[in-house]
Length: 114
Image (cartoon, rainbow, N blue to C red; front, side, top):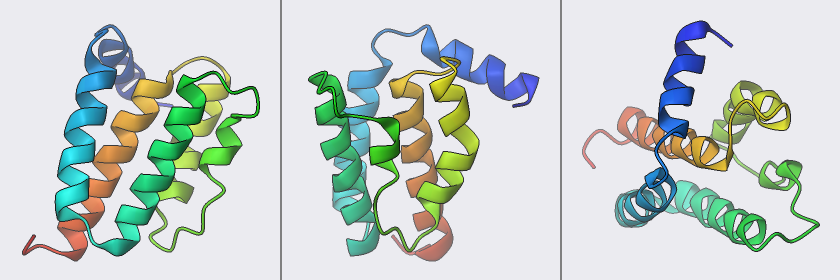
């Protein structure tokens, strides 16, 4: 991971309010604007976050990536962040922040009128 990316993630990690803000903003934006394909991915991600939040012992990060994602977003997300997450370099709020960015970027590229 590049030094710039690490600095960016570290600066986001210091804000304690980022998770609820990101989840609320992301949920509102994504639910309203994304088509069915990305809605289902976002719903899957929110279900995983709920299991993770309640400290369900079976909530392994690999569960996040067990979804038939035709957008390729989860594969890209996994390649970029799964290893840093398992090595405790990033936490769950960064994982969701980046997922939201990827979903929005995907929609902007594939549905510019939205």
